[in-house]
Length: 167
Image 1: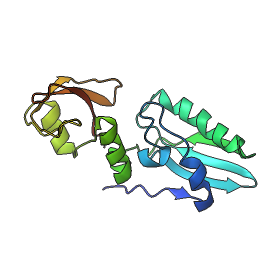
Image 2 (image 1 turned 90 degrees about the vertical axis):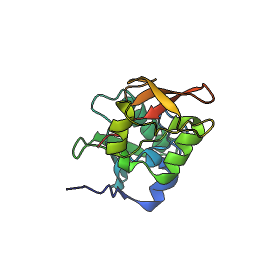
Image 3 (image 1 turned 30 degrees about the vertical axis):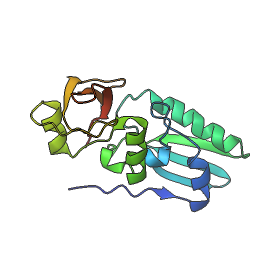
Image 4 (image 1 turned 90 degrees about the horizontal axis):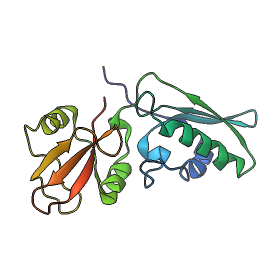
């Protein structure tokens, strides 16, 4: 059973949420990343339900503080709650977020099957973010963060991160 990520967000809160970025990939907003499960104003307080990209992700504390500050800047109190189930999936990254990620130099996640093939070295399918070649190879299962792997392009010789598929 696939759970579709349909966040429950008050439309008037979207402009503020769009100002809060992921500290590890600053070109992505929390909306691009798909970590906001719910954002509502309840009795004058902003209640935000946030799902971590993975359990123990250190960026979640920073994101929570940044969300509180963004709303404090407009005179609102925000309460951030972590929601662990269902677990976040890379399917929740918006299409715009995937494009921003690639332009920033991080290859966006492939499908689960393709991801395994790439990470096991069975197929050259991770596209270089600089030259676009798929003539790439895995350097390390872990890149600059645990959710990324380090690849290198065999054509332009540039290293780049690949955001691993999480389901």
